[in-house]
Amino acid sequence: MTSSSSSRSSSSGWSKEQNKLFERALAKYDEETPNRWQKVARFVGGGKSPEDARRHYERLLEDVQKIESGDVPIPNYPSSGGNEQQRYRNYD
Image (cartoon, rainbow, N blue to C red; front, side, top):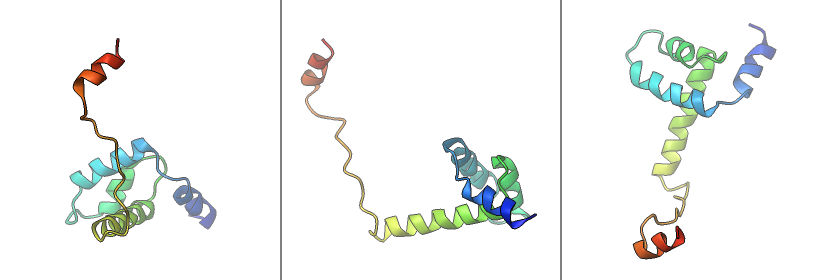
């Protein structure tokens, strides 16, 4: 594999669908699975290499560590609760 094809594959990003497939692949192929990253990459498809899959996993672990250590603020989502009568009036 040439370096240009390797960088093209890894720099192409991960679509929402590929991320969902990645999550499913991680659930299916645990740490004890032989050739785990080859299997994950094949499951995800889209030209992802085993190295792409491994790097994506490493970035995911880093993100989780940052969130758990408080380095990433938790977003302030709007409440889904509130005044139920007011919400119903908005639909009239």
